[in-house]
Length: 190
Image (cartoon, rainbow, N blue to C red; front, top):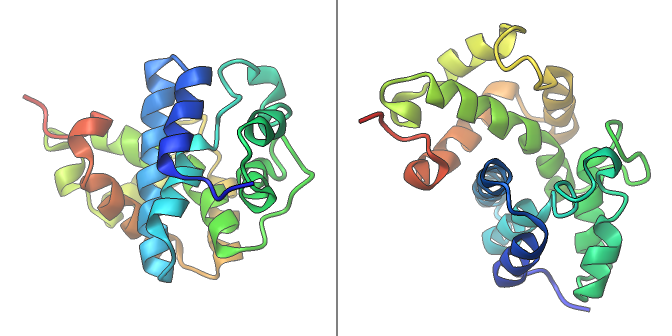
């Protein structure tokens, strides 16, 4: 068994995911996890790999999300701790077996939905994420009609589990995603 690397995460995602929006989401969660790791003084490359692979079974099994992730990750010799980190992002949503207990797990649980909100907000702005401020994102967070499928309660619960304010986690995600604006399609409009 081995600690998950970005190289292996990308290989697994390429094998199991073809839809561009799912690949974009994998990258968004990866870079947000990288930023969260930096905040906590942890291994940012490792956290980024966990973020990248978190939805590895989603395209093939959308109605059974995370029910097949373990077998995919075990077949690739991913260690148990990393498998648990992936599985925990579905806690209370689609997969109740693994409760997030570490900062890595709680961060993934939180930023999975939050990155969608950040991306949606950034795509509405002429400068994309480059001038997106936390105050603007917080307004979008409060507007239940904006990106209505994003469960704000999950994001809030994740922040509470982390012992962090929503605004702080938003700022970390925005800053992390801003570095990859072009790759994420959330840069300035031409």
